[in-house]
Image 1: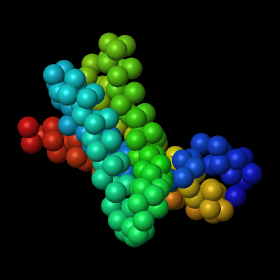
Image 2: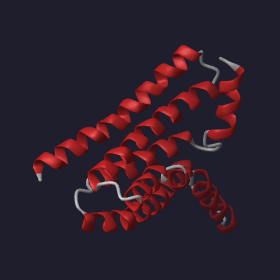
Image 3: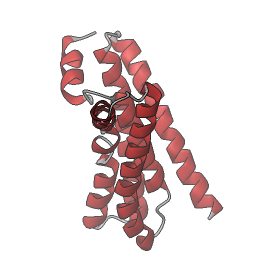
Image 4: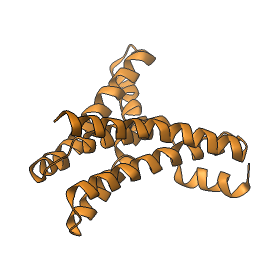
Length: 169
């Protein structure tokens, strides 16, 4: 594994939870994939962060329950706070596709172009999460790129959703 990739992985990759970043990015992109008209854009700008926050709370709570609940009050509250902090990457690392969508539409790009660009950013981000997670775990460059491509394929499934939504509407 090249030293530069390890350095980038430690600086850029979500320090606590790369899986949360993948979950959040996929949720964000899936919501963006349904945008087909300007009125839906406004709803999406509200729905993406709201959905990510609800998903973060629900996922954190499920993780907390799965780890077991300690007996005394301060201990279980500490455990819940820890789960919330651990899973926050679901929110914090997932908003780039939404930011791309907003910038593109603010710059006057047609909505369809902005949506496709945003989905492309999500796929690239998914590739990056896979590449950096593999690099952090000491995989070779080839294996890291392969893992990145597998992550990007997960993002590409969201593009399939976009196409299905567009043609079923």
